[in-house]
Amino acid sequence: MKYSMLFAAAMALATPVWSHHSDAGLDMASVTTVEGIVTEFSMRNPHTYFTIESTDASGETVEWAIQMGSAISLVRRGWTRDSLVVGDHITAMVHAAVDGRPYGLLNHIETEDGALLDTARNRGTGEPALAGLAASASTDSLEGVWMARSAELVSYPGGFDGYFHAELELTPQAVAAQAAFDEFSPESPEAQCIGRPTPAMIVASNLYPLQIDINEEQQTIQIRIEFWDEVRTVYMDGRAHPDISQRSHSGHSIGWWEGDTLVVDTTNFSDHRSPYQIGVPSGARKHVVERYRLIDDGTRIAVEFVLEDPEYIAAPLTHARELIYSPQLELSTFDCDPESARRFLPQ
Image (cartoon, rainbow, N blue to C red; front, side, top):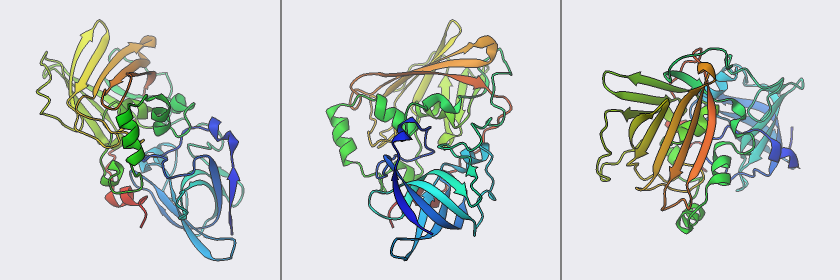
């Protein structure tokens, strides 16, 4: 049993990682090979972990803790609690912690017989169907369950945080806050089971389905995603936003129709230390405008958002993608487990 360092230039073309906290503190430019025996496999949210008992170059026993994505995302890719069993001999390719401790983020797994287990980095026999995700069903309403294909962020190694690293234009205040942020500390929102408000639900829709419910009687629309159990109520009765002193985690959302396009305007967000998973905060002036429009004969939604926060973002960020109508999918409860959420912190 052994572990060794391999540099992987091809990582720049790899598909997104299953990370829920940032890749800060991890060596994302290279991968470490860890070979050994599985001693634990724990499927939880926000992170699934397994441990490997290995030996280092001097022959000393080392136990590695390897982080994967949420149990929800793993199950959707076909994993079960028996996918790894204590006693299995495996080889794991991981992005190791830069502080030298035996901790890492999974890249891919090879079993003793040479099979590749399906992960976000290496899909084994090919990209999974994600429970039959396909543009076959159709609807005449925005109401229902929707999900983007997993390739939506393929050009951004690191997935969620890779996207924001690449696209956000930061103010000097944001740069200073990012430099001061310690991902591996209790101040990390994920360590406290604090999720990410919009537009995270759109960016994360390639891994988690999004559900829209329309209540015409109460003149509200509810938008929910599995990711951190984020739920928003959009008020469609013509009201204005409340005073800025009334702030909440998910903000205050009002909406209206522009022809066949639903426009959702959200402000009044509470301060958040790292809503983009890169150590950049958001403040009182954060403002998000989303647009949802049914296209392709009701099989897809064209969705886009414009994100502004002049305190931390130097220029508005605009993003667009398509969501596929997926009535066969059911949203699960994320139900963040505090022990799992804190496990990435140094002991």
